[in-house]
Length: 142
Image (cartoon, rainbow, N blue to C red; front, top):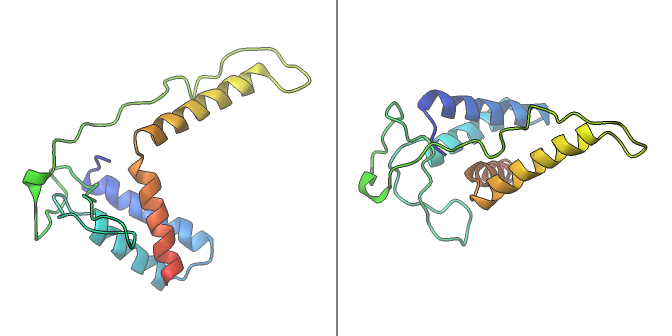
């Protein structure tokens, strides 16, 4: 992910709000937010292990110029990040169609576009999914 400091802050806030909606206490949600910030919120962070018994890897997702630089920065180890592109451009534009007993072709076309988009994100190694999984592990560990 290539996020600015504001985008990263928004992401962490949304994770906290999602946790709170499931009944996680404010103290626990704050702890998760701090863990996310420490693990992913500094550009040029050295490799670290997030999930036990897995190799240490680069974890920085806040990589724009306004992101704080890690105190132990390893910027030379990071290649230039490319902004992600839209996986499917027709997600919000339903395809016209007629209804049938099994549902409309519009719904099927929109569903297909969403599935294609999700599959494309998964194929590119979606960091967001990994981060959300790590956040879930962090909440479970509390």
